[in-house]
Length: 162
Image 1 (tube, one colour):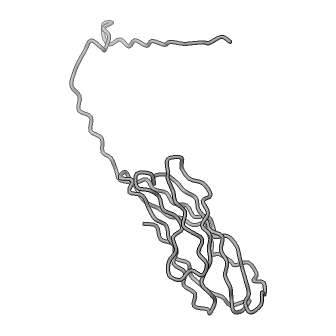
Image 2 (tube, one colour):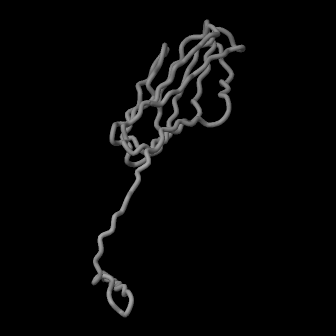
């Protein structure tokens, strides 16, 4: 098997055929580092629950949350935390979910939240380690709700990234 090695030398000349390397001068270079952002986006549109199925005393509906995207471009790279707060005012039961990582930037180190059955208050979806959170992560969660009736259900899931 033959190996090909290429060596390229580029010599740049200034005025009158003098190589630029012969001239020395101090030069000040100023770099302004702009701190970036921490952003959360959710696929468009309200989430419609699948038709509930009757199972004993409750109606059950299951599905997957719309894809969530966390983008961190902050220079300090402090890491981040994504959580959800579930508010049910229609007489159902708390949300149950299983956080899932869809994909992430190669440099990120993420820890997924644990599956929660009957979430009251807030639940952790994912955490990015400090010094390893910069980049883009796509996440979701499988969910289950037990409902007292098949229609007229309203609830709010508030997602927060900090």
